Length: 418
Image (cartoon, rainbow, N blue to C red):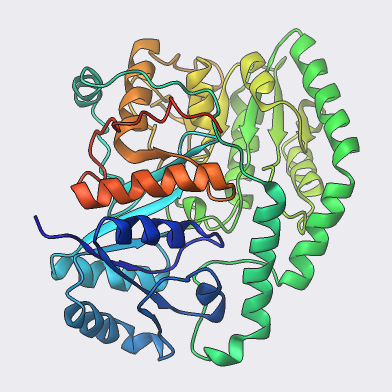
């Protein structure tokens, strides 16, 4: 079997692609990369890097010529819904080139996705319970206890370097346009800083509120918010942000939830704070006459909130997967990889409040086992032990043609301790 010739497109603000390229070269593979903006170049130290500075409407022809000249067999990228990537994936499929997509894992905290063609709604992972059970029979149950811990300060520094780099070096790539929505970094990072300064107070409030609701007579439901600019919202749901699903959830809760129940709304831990979601959610609750029954928190113990909740509502957050692991009912509103009969509630949202479907614990175990070994590698993007583990396994799967297939590595990810 010939060695893969791998082209790297855009990734995260992380050395991960650089490490994967090193591992591939150690196995005799040819590698290269295309840069769409100067910050892409910051995180690539391998050979055969080439910038693309042309207009977007010429990108497809450039890609065709590049992969043909370099006899590319595989591409690796983050974010299959990025505009440049959508064109590249279409052209790659037409040319018989394998497409590999990586991102933060469906499982958390130290798992990374590695799939063929795409994630979430584009994932090839089976949705049929019988197929999941058959797949799981051949696989061991992994140890889900955390092994690798990412360094938050590294994530913050690299993320700022990337996005400030876009501002200050945009003139070098005048035709480049980002594929995702995000605030200007001069607004984005100060807002994050302010939120971090308030974090101790917010955490105390969140723990107090969740404890109060856990002691309540009627119980509560948890609504797990996500990031508005994330592709899981804008590409894998019918929503263009979070206001519409939030309004829909609160309106349905007001009409159909038992009158003695509460709704706990939890802000995403990486929300920037540039929008005042506490005020927005409060206004929605007032409009629907449930202001006294809707509580908003920023922080707190997620596992504790899930364990005490009557059920979890979300668009397609990985919080839904954690709820399944803890045996709690889940209702997703978008395209979620866990929106499967026997796992998530299959009826309408209105019926969820009074009669939520309890997940089948046996199927949950089979699904988790199959998901872990088929579309994940163990590791992280922002710590050396996690980077080494994830890069090594990613390279091995690409070389062996095992991306997206059930694969138990020779060196089990459960055997290494960060």
